[in-house]
Image 1 (cartoon, helix red, strand yellow):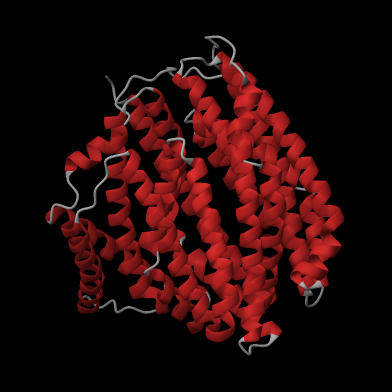
Image 2 (image 1 turned 90 degrees about the vertical axis):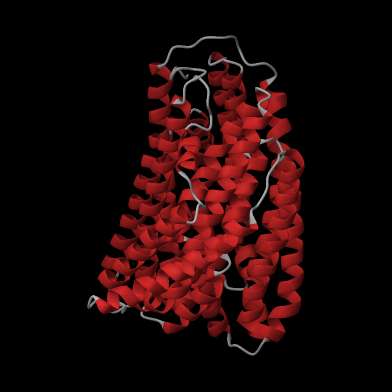
Length: 522
């Protein structure tokens, strides 16, 4: 029994993490640029456009990415690479049909959506432009699901970087050559156009890489059986529940500015507060999540193949180690962001109000990260329908709370809703995971990690002050303080026994089997 596959998963996780961190860094830089160009209210209006467009995007993909990953993983689990090619052909046809239908629906309904749903006709041009990207968006999800299943994520990761850079280049170039002040309507249309160009380029690059990948590897095994039935059996239940959840999420996002206005804020102030929380604070708070978001995606095919092979002990071991490492990581991230939130907000946005909300949301991170990896493991174990039902219930509760609390408590009511619904969602998800695996949490480890995290950041501040580098809002100062805090926290975790060397070795080899396909994929 070799651990080559374990090394592949570790390598792919680190690769996706590095890619995600790079993309988030570029994305935040771009968000800073946009906030200066169109202001917080413009960011808020753009977030509303994206909330409505997500409903069309959800219909465009209709569960196809997960279905592709699951079907390909099943064929690989059977040792049948010949069937993978047939699976991809059927999935691409599915994606093309739903992507085109979603594109037409959004294009022709844009006036109604902009004027009635969003309540701002300035969004209509952006919605129509955005509709053009949906076919490519759906097809890209098929190919990304394939590369995830075959553990060659470097290809999709490279394309993601290229897409982001193309999108930003188009937007910056268009806004730079515009004479004078650019209206919010035109700015939103320009940003969406950049996204369309990036999405089309992304699909073309992924398709070229897939064709190269398909021709490179030898086929063996038989044809896949009952592909269409299996595809619809996986994708459609996911799609129907995703429609419901996205519709509720869209309703929630549309209700937030309206609820803020009912609390006494003006229309522009309501959009500004919404833009600050959704477009400026949450990207900063979730920035460190790249590692475990990547792992949550990569764990799906691994859990699926372990389940197909009947390795229940291995599944429980993976679940326990991943959850424990995620918990330790998220507690450290929460402590760092909480402590340095004023300096981060001044450095990035030059706005103390943003820092206030960053600190309020920083303690949300452990539950958010744990919920993400828990959902990933449940999907890998075939519990995708359960996670979707929980997410729908979560959205229903969120809509009710937004409607009732925001007029009374304004933006602080929204912060409470974010915390409450995340805890609710995670509680139901972790209970389900405990039913199908043997997982456990150690209270002493949790307490030690909390004390270590907050102790590390305060020791780092005191130590660097003594060494002549006091904390301020300069990039260098913040970077040094965060680096020292992370090193101290890691050392404390090892010293207190929260992380041991065998954890790292077990994580690297957690698949513990010879590669099924020896690198020979369609």
